[in-house]
Length: 165
Image (cartoon, rainbow, N blue to C red):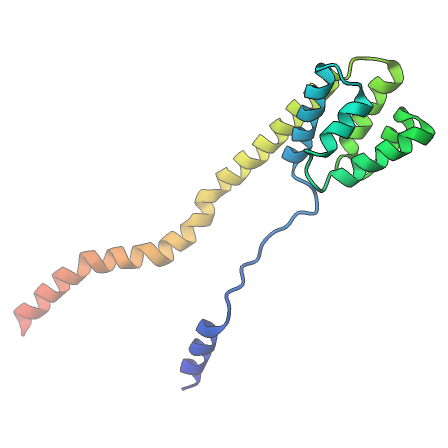
């Protein structure tokens, strides 16, 4: 009786799957922002104008940091505002500070950062894919194999029992 009640309670309760949520913005969002800024800068926009344009298309979690840098740039200068940038796009903003200070081209910096972030993302995806067969082994063994064995053994067992009886 107790076992039946426990089983009924387990089946009636909502199933909760544990979901891993990272606190960081995916590297693809920052890489996409690099691509947007690179497109705008290569198209002839200045960095400030490119950042204003990219804010509308950037990932929502990146927008507050970009807006804060644009606000601070009016008072302390673009290079200082970029160095003080915080949030998920801090790495990008810090990488942009150097060419702004020196007057170097911004496009190659953005392209290099984008390529590195995409390579890191691809490596992380490949690592997770390599772990997949190990994670699928237990469900395969517990769910698929018993049914397969039953399909193979059951006809022979029924045949043997019918010959005995």
